Image 1 (cartoon, helix red, strand yellow):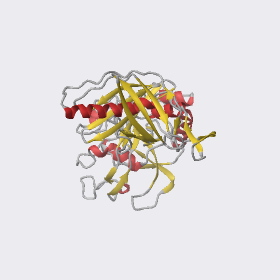
Image 2: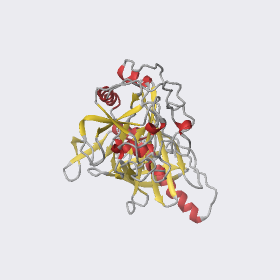
Image 3: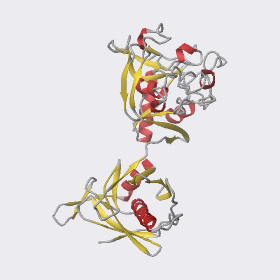
Image 4: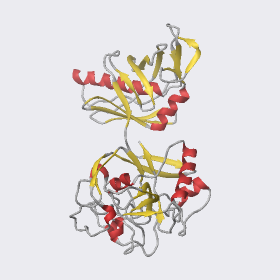
Length: 400
C-alpha cells in the first residue's frame, strides 16, 4: 500500500555547468537529497531493526517491523546534521530542525534547491523501502535501508550501490534550563602522556613519569568549565565562593560532581561524565591537531600562558568568567590551564607505573592562584573525593 506524505520545500538545484557529465552528477545529487527529504516526512517506516506490530504480517507470515514517525524524528533531530558521500568529490551536509530539512549544502561547485513532494512504498518485513520524489516535473527513484541511531543507507541505482548516511563528528551545543554549553568534538589518537624524562622539567614531580603511549577514542569535552549558571539550572542551588553566572563553579568535591552529572543525565537523557585524565591531557595538548608538537607544555596553542590562562601572575587573586582569556588552545578549549583545577574520573597514582590509589582522584590544569609550573598539561595531583576548594571545579565529557 502506497503511503502519501506531506509536501515540504527545500529550494531549486542550481549548477554552473550543463555538460552531459555534470547533468548526470546533478541527477545523482538530486537522488541523495531525496533520500534525506524522505526521512523527515510524517510516516511509519518498515524497518527490521525497530519494534514491530503484532497485527501486521508480511508475505512470509512474519511480523512487520515498524518505526514510528516520532522515532524517526527523534533520531534525526538528536543528531541534527547528516552527511552522505557518493564519491571522492561529492559530499552533502543536511541540517535538520524541528520536523523538516532546513538547509542542504554541497561541499563543491553546486548549490541545491527545491523538492516539491514525495511518496513512499515500503516493502513489508524488510529493513528496506523504495520511494520517489517529484521535482520540476521529473520523478526520481531511490531506496533506503538499515535506519538506526548511528545512520542509514541510501541507494541511487535501484539497490546496486549503497552509500552511508552518517553523522559528522562535530561540536554539539546543549541547552538545559535555558543555559547553553558547548561540547567540543575531539578525534582520538595515540599520544605520549606524561613528561619526557630528559625534558627541561625533568626535576618536576615523579608522578608525571614515565612518559608513555596512551590511546584515546573519539569523545566530547566541555569547551569551558561548568559554570555556576549551569549548576543552578541542574541542581536548583548555588555553589561557589566567587559568585556570577559565568564564573566557573568551585567549592565542589568529586562527590558533588557525581551528583550533578547524575541529575544532568536524568534531565537530558545523555550520559555525561567526567573526562579520564588520559582524555583530559590529550585534549589539553590540542588533540590530533597538535599533540605531536613540542610546544605542549601548557594548554595554550601557539600563544603565551598570559594570553590563555588565569593564574597567579594575572588573575588578580580571583577566578574569572569562563572563556574570557584572549585565546584557547588548538581545539579552542578554554581554561584547560588555569582558572580552576578540574576533577577527572581517574584514580591517582605515585607514577604511571604504580598501581592506582582508589582513595584519591586526579585533578588537572592548575587554578587562578597556581604558579605556571602547576598549569602545565602534564601536572597531576590526587585529592580525596570529598575535598573541595575555591580553585577547584570540573568540566564535562561525553562519549561520541
